Length: 416
Image (tube, rainbow, N blue to C red; front, side, top):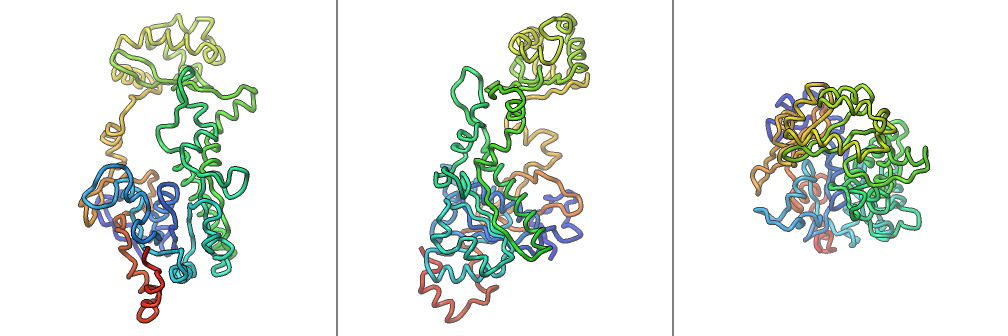
């Protein structure tokens, strides 16, 4: 079925796509909370999957009450930004009655995503082996801090721990500064993206063989996978990666530079650009300077190089230098805040902020689609669900009614 957007201006053509979204007809059970799992499932939902968010009765996804500031309703802005296009079913999976409903859903599902600590799903009797017996075609993705196996598997897994233990924090910040994590949750979001990659690959395989499979995705592995540039240098030279602030291990100058009124970023990453930069800032002597003649020498003398360049850069504003360098074909850019990035002419053109309708909050801002699909543009066709909003609807779809429903209610299937 073709999805109908709930806001007219969300896709590129301001209309519903002419053909079904790529994942229309695919059912996903979202048995996850907080960030990596819900974000992964939202990406699938944006592509048309029927994502059923299974939440604990009473409290729901703990992100609903996170972030420390109040909205009109009880759901946080964080929840509203990670759960659009889903339906919410409240189900107590600790009860036999709740599991009975869950098993009926599993029979209809193509994909399941969960992010509980390893062992929890097995204890509940809803691990991959148990559900594979019910639905051999199920693609079952488990997201955890450190994976389902290994000596760290049982540790609580959060983005901060994954950044620290994967090495990400060892290369973040300035050489003489304290440990610093990346400003955005790279392990959480990275894991969500890798999980989507695994899930869709497994689903394509399922369409050929009829068999699903188990996917083990972890924040630790995902964060470590981002180190490809640093580890390439380490394996190639034996030099352990270290913190460089905004600079780069492979090219110089390639970093933030101080201008008259603040900082901007620029890069002259090859000899042609280096010569062009020296000429453009009227410092031809730098091109002949023995310390900076080649890129390896510029890397070895990175601090001296930045000092020399900033003697010139502090004579004009950051915007002036960005305009000057870009006009000359030298990569450069301002250091924007998030509001500046969203509100920039380019951010608006790329529709990286959008507003969706919500029954309690009214218009709710959401981050736009990071990938633009021309033939079947992603859609927002459901608001982030209220807790348990679709419970009755989904039970009806499963044919659960009458005495059976009363029995399940008496068994605590929908209560905490």
